[in-house]
Image (tube, rainbow, N blue to C red; front, side, top):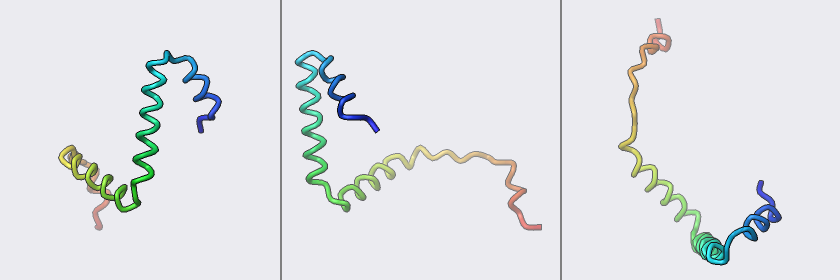
Length: 70
């Protein structure tokens, strides 16, 4: 787990404009998590999985014979 001190040190190394971006990003994460219900998260995962279903690769596995009953 990343400690708060580590995050704080790294943020201090950033220029002011980047710190503003970090703050906006964190605010967005907080807003999303505050309005997201378990059902919303479940639907989001399902949508993501469905959007990647076309990436399925079926390999020709010549080892299938080891699973056959004799």
